[in-house]
Length: 298
Ligand SMILES: [Zn+2]
Image 1 (cartoon, protein in one colour):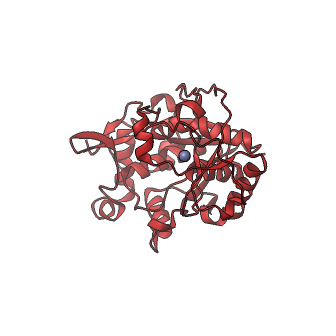
Image 2 (cartoon, rainbow, N blue to C red; image 1 turned 45 degrees about the vertical axis):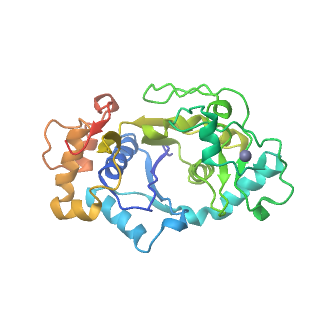
Image 3 (spheres, protein in one colour; image 1 turned 60 degrees about the vertical axis):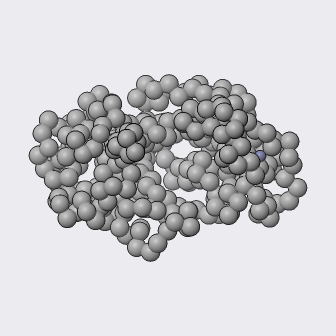
């Protein structure tokens, strides 16, 4: 009997950095402390930004931190399933082409919960007259107009009417790359993921993904969103990004030393003494985990 399955799904368009490693550690601890299997899924669909060696680099960084996994999935190997999902959506008459630019959305002036601008579903009336494979324009999917009532495992209320508050999402880009909202729900279902743990920057997209799961007849995993590491960028606080890449971390710290630093930031231990994920697992409890975002390095 399985108690379910968790996953960590980093994009490999950039190197692992402290934010990546914190998210991986929390995903791993959530799964392992609950007796669940753990899957690493490498997100490599955005081939426009890939270079060779990135898969191995990401896995090396996770191993360095002390993590292990039952399975490693390459997102690009799931291409047939992404296509099948687009077929299903087209068969329901839900796909439509839309070339509205970011600038047009901005002009509408309506903010969306993710901090961007809502798309006003202005092209819903445009029919997709060809097979989606032959369409050279971005494709959106018409979401149900209903509200999603959703509270995640951390107690965060993610209830939303995504079709209105966010707008219908793009599911296939003009360059043919299948877009994030669609692949993430297809990939989670393909690996039978029961528990999704991820940064709170993705919380506002959960309702959109919930509707996509329903349209595709997929199960809804349980979600939990965690705090983020922030950095100061252009005098503003922003989600920690490419600064302190793994290649640099590795030259300053051992894996256990860095695990200790993350554990302190996450309030999993009082000091930043070197430790391993396996050591942290014994006393892991989400109630003790830091909830506010943290400026890093402190
Ligand atoms: Zn449009």
